[in-house]
Length: 86
Image (cartoon, rainbow, N blue to C red; front, side):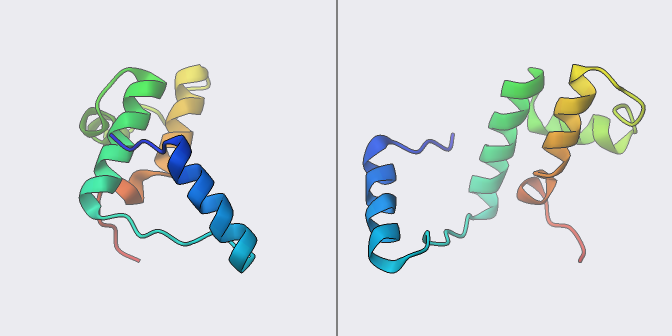
């Protein structure tokens, strides 16, 4: 799982003060998948893989419920979970 501890936040805040902007961090595909899976489990109680399967099947398209709103937020994180064509 992706977790940012207090030490990391303090170090990042120090870099911002020194350089004026936050450092850009590049996540590996594995770390991106872990992040996506964590967010899917937190938002909907399902794995990231299950979310992608259901998203691709169109199960969230017409859902105006809270799950639909959470699904649309997760959709913005799909590029962290799998490579997509640009």
